[in-house]
Length: 530
Image (cartoon, rainbow, N blue to C red; front, side, top):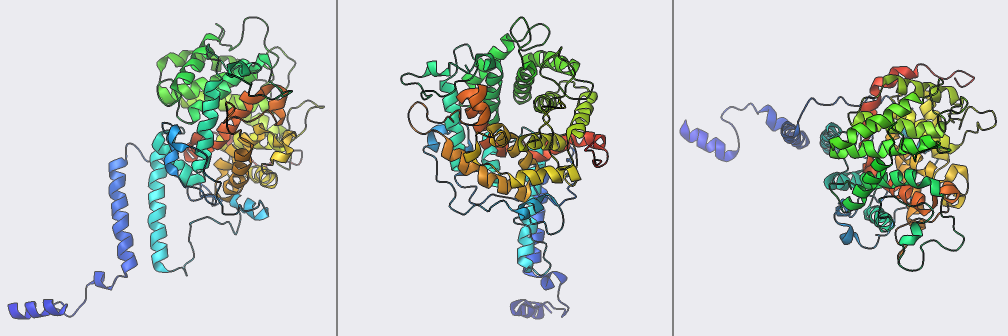
């Protein structure tokens, strides 16, 4: 018997003629099982809490599977501490950018939706399906870990590298971010503010701004300081960490010193003409800093700022320029206020649900049947631009409206047909304000919607950024609101924030945060747009 066992072992057969089930399994299946066991083991090690439920995406969008053409190279440029190693911007990806066509809007749902890297074809070779399953499992694990880290969880060096490669950034975009932040750092006043109209006094020689270039309004120093701080925070620079920790620390100190006893971020005396922009941006920046640092000293100032905003909410659900004016709803102001309140709640500061429910009423009331959000409810100022459509879309997605809602699809079509175009920077619909809100909205949509938008955005921004000399890294005051009050500080802060889009927020966590408000959206719009 022993001889027989030895002989059959040498011949590669079992003493019993019946083959094992495992021996009949195809190699690709065995590989799949082995990979999934490894993934499961990694998941057990990384799991730190209750797994977050996957975002329900009835439209089939897959935020975790798209990489814009040519993205992902030089991922090591993502660390905020390697600015010196980034060097000159790498060439923009040579692969042609797909034009925005009606096909691009299929990424927001409907039949025929395409997903990069996803194979659902049963006729596909079995090994390809197995490899895809493993890749999807690994991506799901990574997404779950980032989501548990919160909506700001990608602002670490490792998170930046992963997000840049995953969502379509590059060494060139990261170099542009670092150069933009360096320009902001060079042009910060010693008291911590960014001076809208006199930033050029920080230039050692010839001013950065050219002859006749708009320099911004002096009254905008506080909101521009908050905006520049948001750009710093987006790349992981806080008062405690990052290449630009000192500018971040000075900016936080300036904002805190600017807050009055009533919670307002303003000088003593009458309200600034458009005070709620100032208040919203200051609360927004300090709340994100609180979330990133957990510095308890920031909690009370943010809370007082939130209380002032909540008390100023209009009966119609939105916000006006400042307290004391005749009732009026302003969609642009409301957009910044809601982002500030969401940031505060995410940082652990109490925010009343009625504030968000009211803002949803505002968006529903001012949205037209074609998906465009009116700028205000003033009869003479109710224009509905692509810029306002992007603001409305950000609020809808951040406050839990499903991706397959008709209003979301309608607004997404507007963005798809009006991508970034620098030749139209003088227009309301193509200013950097639109580019930032459009980038955030497209990022939350994911899929081909973001790939198409990103493919237009990046070349335009990289081509417009200043190169060489003391002005290196900034953007000129050429777009609409940069020319009309914001100046180069405004343009540079928003330009940086656009190129940080890959890691400013973890999209799944943002959508999960908005889930509790989903029911407030109700049904579809009526014919009158309400």
